[in-house]
Length: 323
Image (cartoon, rainbow, N blue to C red; front, top):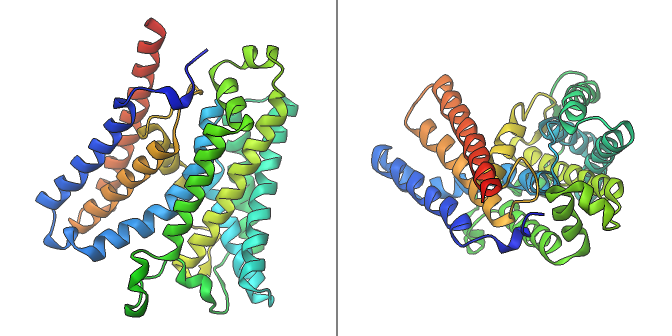
């Protein structure tokens, strides 16, 4: 069985941090002067809140040895749920609760299909990716859903002068809080230990008495709930519910986990590494955008990073097996 996720050598988390520093200063040097501004840093933090929140759930799933391709669709669907709830007269807290429950229910369905049908997570979540996207479009009647203005739109909006003491928008602080909770769950709870055990060696975990199917359903449910909260942040950023948003977000989320040291083979991954990976993805997108590079170049760069991250993951996995 692999070593617990908390016992990895120091360079396993230092590497992604150094990568983030190198990428950031690369764009500081070659990009426009505005890239090094406080405003750009705040924009990067706001954008990372969306990728990072969804990536927290994906961290649990990948450490478990699974994958979830439906994350982007869940985000789109729950952004519509928030808009419809507010439009129907619900308060902001009720809208957040409904979005979280909708995401959790979707994750529960994913986990149940994977465990009951004994089908690979890739296949199940590829199917639900399309299914949930269709539900999102149906709920929104294939158009954006406007909603009354509430304090939800302030979660990821630029801070006004009187609230500069917060340093970053509330949505970023929400990401920080969720990250702490997820890290504690993964490192210090029985559920976290079971997640690592299943991802390291499912057969051994089952022989040790771990309720494998139950843990899988719980993890996918938590991932769905976090994707639901990501939908709330997406709504805050757009101020509307959009069933077509977050297409391809799942790739950024998976890449963030892998860049941060998570293994697609399961059993490895940290919340800190995931957040660093999310920041790397956001910095690259922000840097290429400010340099005026066309979207197709940005997509090539992002795709190259994803392929490189997977290649490095496989190399690390083969090296660990050889040793």
